[in-house]
Image (cartoon, rainbow, N blue to C red; front, side):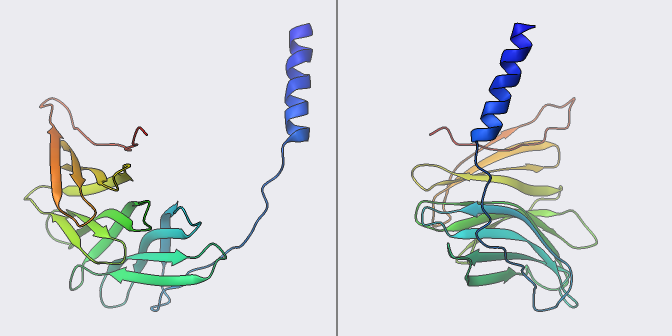
Length: 193
């Protein structure tokens, strides 16, 4: 009985002394086509700038990857839309920001016929890397290490993949894992700092 009372007292004192978060600002992004917008991932840089990525539906181009940047006060700095060409569905999965404020987006694109292909974008579209094979390819999760190198996971068919790029988009190394009896999918990647 004394253990239960102690736990209750500890929980009550933690909840009384903890502060509730304060809402600083809220922003709504509406793409130029005024259709469906889906922002699915977000990152914050060292200066407090907020980046978000996802995709927006368009009338003439399928879905485009969209990335937006707000400063720490919530003022829109830029919004970039990426279309891989024509009526293609481009979809973002994840994003990361390095210590210099560069953002990177991982995702995939597909046309209604054929397999999807992985894509890695420097957020403001300075460079783009594509993973194109005859199989279904996706780049899914992304992280940045202490050297500002980009690590991204993905898959090609039923093979799990990990890539490492420098901040100018040069491939540093890649690794793959395939187990014939199983579907191998890559998951979330985190950097040990």
